[in-house]
Image (cartoon, rainbow, N blue to C red; front, side, top):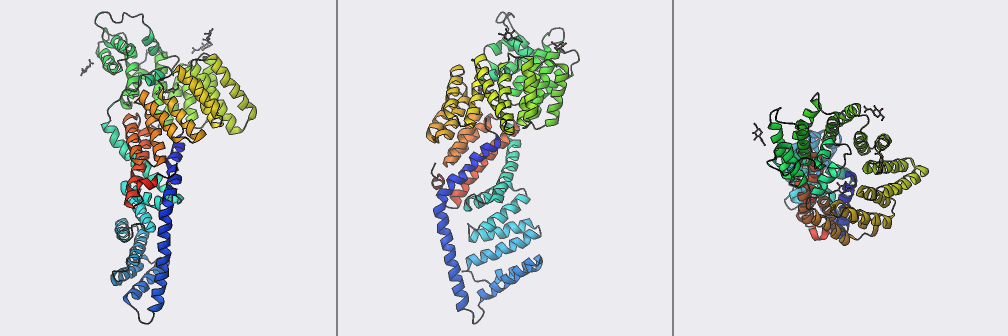
Length: 548
Ligand SMILES: *[C@@H]1O[C@H](CO)[C@@H](O)[C@H](O)[C@H]1NC(C)=O
Ligand SMILES: *[C@@H]1O[C@H](CO)[C@@H](O)[C@H](O)[C@H]1NC(C)=O
Ligand SMILES: *[C@@H]1O[C@H](CO)[C@@H](O)[C@H](O)[C@H]1NC(C)=O
Ligand SMILES: *[C@@H]1O[C@H](CO)[C@@H](O)[C@H](O)[C@H]1NC(C)=O
């Protein structure tokens, strides 16, 4: 999966695509501007004899500018006041400049509402006034008016062909703040959604020693005979893929008295997993904590609960708590491969490749038959080799990938990760073949289609074909957040902003963590603001399409 920063680059790719459409319009405005300058100088030379109101206003403006330079902002404001009062109506652009200059003085005095109202007047006179737009954006950022700050900084980015680095950084900051605000709201009204069957299956099979999952797969219990209740009912629901019934059935088990119930820990663990899978992190944390704090609980179930709680902490940006849980898990279960496999993944996300490698190494030693850990080890070795430019380690990791494929020919992860490595090395043909093999084993995995689409984009730049493949992903799994998000990003790149917004909204509805939501809202709001501003500035979304 591409990292967040990579997705951002794709989204900002609009800068490159949109720039072409904007170029014509940009040339036109700059020509007009130089014409105005000629006219202005002509005016000044022919009217030197007696001071007209315009001259007087200009004089006050210059005076204001001088005072501004000397740091006398209040005095500067008085001069600009006079200039604004005197100047005849027809000098619209000059009046706009005066307002803009006065706003600059207010900005120095941190009088944000005055900055905003003066910039607004300047912009009403000249809606493409970059300096005024940028200044207003900054004042809006100071007053946490994120929506308007975003629109204004978007205007600046569009007008300057995405060439202003500071404006881009500001857009990024504002989008993040707005995303946080929107996500906090959305999470309150969020309806739990059960992910696709494939997703649930992949989640459970990422643990090799989950006692509860093993129990779920055993069929020695008299399932389907008589009236099942509690955990056994949950087990039947799981086996028959009626996932929406699992949580209630587990609750039923937990409601039973001690003497009636023999599956309390199992019910807690299973319920926690489903709370997690449906994005109900708070509830999941409570159940996992109960397991962890139960003195005589099965140590293997406790280790598993610690790993699962660590992963929730990771997704809610509580890194220290996450690492502490892994530490406790390693103490209770020093021989449990899962602890090290899952911690290795966290270390990879943290860019601690070296520590990730030793964790994966340990996971593989403890359980050489656990395919997912083996292939993750290959992948972290590859990362380390690239970072340290170690050629022999690189060769070794390639060989290990091939061995992993031989040993686990039915594990889709092996092919998918190796394909990602091949894509990075620009060995596109091999990557495509690996994805094809993964699809043979796991034909209903939407992510593989998305990866193939991304590969086509990078390999051949075939955007139509890539979109077609990614639409397949949505067809086979209409709950694939990754597919909606990636499609949305590609549509942004093509200038199809309306469609992109719709796709991002679908992804948002499926997002399970607040962190994911913040990111998705940022993508959506960037697209929405660009759409709005393009039409406000008369650039037109069709012009924004560029030449992809
Ligand atoms: C697809 O497969 C990959 C690798 O096995 C897995 O990580 C991912 O969760 C799967 N995605 C879905 C939607 O099933
Ligand atoms: C469990 O008990 C609570 C409180 O007594 C009750 O509200 C709830 O309906 C019960 N749930 C199930 C599934 O038995
Ligand atoms: C871990 O495995 C080793 C070797 O198999 C064994 O000696 C040790 O007792 C195990 N430790 C625990 C805590 O299970
Ligand atoms: C791994 O799998 C092989 C073949 O299925 C088996 O012979 C071996 O005992 C397994 N090793 C471990 C450590 O489970």
